[in-house]
Image (tube, rainbow, N blue to C red; front, side, top):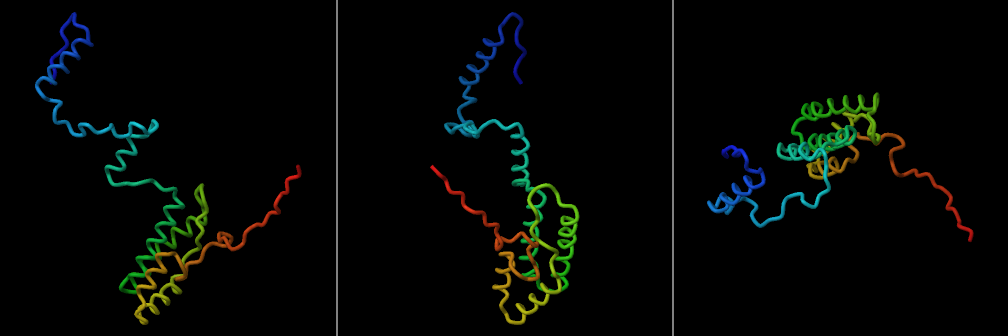
Length: 173
């Protein structure tokens, strides 16, 4: 703890003297980051820098928009369900996700559309059984991770197969 500023002494000279004395004692010699640039010195100012830094420190990466977070959850759950050891576990994983998909479709949050309809659990389970019986679990896991079949259908109109074709405008000079 530093001593109190003596009366009649300017703040600048008092602070300068404390810094000089600390340098003479060697208190600044072994500071972490010595000789390195200041972190974030070339980053534009952000009012929420402290919140973002705290989230990174606590292991939270980025906050996704609700629909994008649900898309990620669907993909992760499909991959986990494809690796599940028992049919009951597959159903246990997919039922809560189906409820979330249905809730999202009933009342979509602002942002991009979900792009999924509820998962056909019976179709997923039958494909899961086929993969287990044929011993082709690796292909099934890869397909689920890629977000393909297994009873999961993209929502109508969300595919890129049908695109609106607009006539090209010709420029007349």
